[in-house]
Image 1 (cartoon, helix red, strand yellow):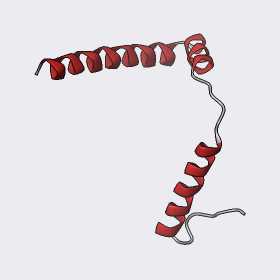
Image 2 (cartoon, rainbow, N blue to C red; image 1 turned 60 degrees about the horizontal axis):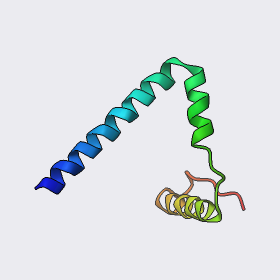
Image 3 (cartoon, rainbow, N blue to C red; image 1 turned 45 degrees about the vertical axis):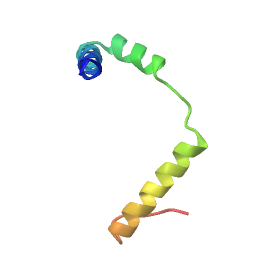
Length: 70
């Protein structure tokens, strides 16, 4: 039970920080630029593969609606 309460506290702290960050980003372009700089990462081959498989699944689910360019 203690572990559950500790986890809940951690999640509430993370949620509070996330909401505060979102509010500051929405009011300040400087805050947005700082956040983007801190969270920028180069896409990996795994990211590209995951995106391609997602697009493939969507194309199979909705034939004709998703255009795949090879």
